[in-house]
Image 1 (cartoon, rainbow, N blue to C red):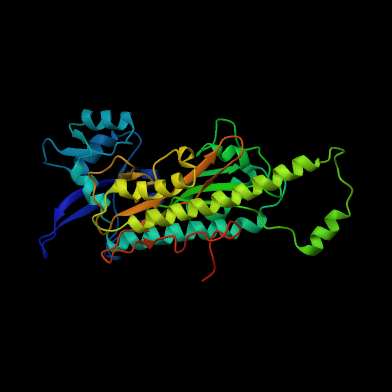
Image 2: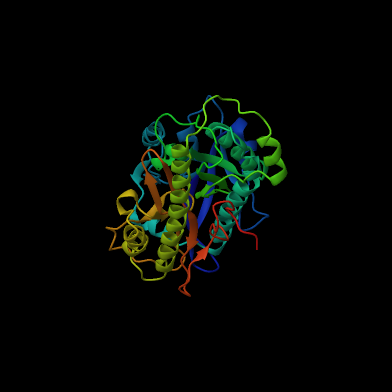
Length: 369
């Protein structure tokens, strides 16, 4: 995708003209991407190249004919071979500048609406798949259910992290995860991102499964135990204590998220948002177990600037900025809890949750209206 700055002949404002470079046989797929355009009558500008052509020369001749020394600012994730190809065709390539970051940081109303749709939809997908969560399911099986749920509503999942109990003691899990199974008292951490119309979601919920109904529990209790190994009274007490700690930490992290949300207002520093959450967790004695920053910008990419960390005193929040707010507590060998929602900084001073509502109970990731 190539975005060219052009001057609107009517308003005199600088706008972005979007074009795509694609193999000729993929042009149809590009049109199916659903990229929104301001004027529905205006078709996407697609420069197609045959496989025996040089794509970079095709781009130069198709979009920049007669423009010597055209300069292209390339995204930091652009693959090296593409950068070298552009250079070989006579383009000057430079990295993203601060001006582009500044533009990305302040969202327009259409961008906000898309971010609201994709993040609310992602939380609703988690809610929709919760009835499928039963004792014995593995982390990998839960990921498959979640991906299929997101795909069914037209989203494109690009990452999901599902961690059960002690696997969640590292924020993104260890190198070997996927096989932990749900138990009756398991805490399940689900962190997921999806794309919709070119924008990203990034949501995390930490949940229990629903307890069996009374009739189901009665039937289960009549079945002889499959294992000869029974819990001792000491083990039962330890499990009860662990469950109490899970609940305590769950609500503590929710309080920390609320404290950070209160700082998501114009002219707050990025550091103040992080510190607000950190102070709540530290006061409860869990400070060393909150091991990452509280959030980051989000938009076209799941991770954008500015970053909400305790050292970022220079960045001042402005209306139109959108951030994740994701405090967490991680206890080695036990469990981890993280709550993550996406918020819009507003002129009024009260941040808007673009996921619609925060979690309110560990058994209900999206409370009903």
